[in-house]
Image (tube, rainbow, N blue to C red):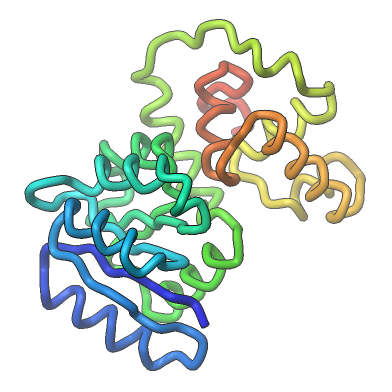
Length: 221
């Protein structure tokens, strides 16, 4: 059973999500929060597998709440999906950097929301290739020039190559096709890269690929 916490300051939005998710045989909504501070408290209390976190909330916004939850060792098994009204929300990139595993726009189709919950709860990042490119490229162009990234020295040439393709939004299957290896081999390379860099999940690997200068906006277009 996938345990979900809903964090949104609109009660009607929470009610809609609860009705949809509780109707699934493998998903259970175990808590709700109307602001970021309450989300942090509830996360510690119910230890959810996944939190659907709105960005704009009173008292403590979703960005700050995400950072607090991601930094708590006791909540290392909790994944966070950011809810945004717009695809290119100025705070989404910061949320990914802070530990979120992906994001959804609030007008996402119900079937896509259910799929997203299952995917992220299963340990994958929710990063659509097209949206990833637009989102990361948009804010990477505003960021400062990347400085030295000594952690990259721990990677092999192939791992750097794989990391760059992850940063471009490619799936394991697409990476396998690009490098002419099996999907299992591509997955192994991605996993080893995450371990070496201490990345919480694939989403943080994407952010690090851009921030380190390994990938530049538009390079794969």
